[in-house]
Image 1 (tube, one colour):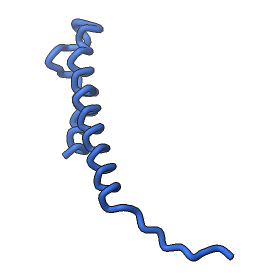
Image 2 (image 1 turned 180 degrees about the vertical axis):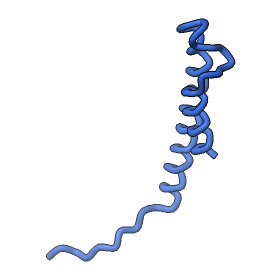
Image 3 (image 1 turned 90 degrees about the vertical axis):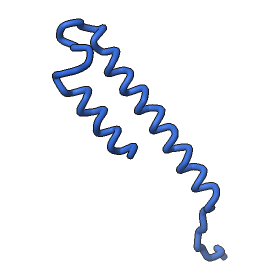
Length: 68
């Protein structure tokens, strides 16, 4: 789901039609784009935390032989 949100954020940023048009209002029109990227940053952070928790729970098993 996070990947879908990321793709949607990119499309929304590049799409010429926005809730607040960039070409009419200039820098003020970037506010909605920045909001989308803020939401995307929160989703990415949450996914990273889930991944790290799962990695810590499962542990890492390395199959190695002792060096002589």
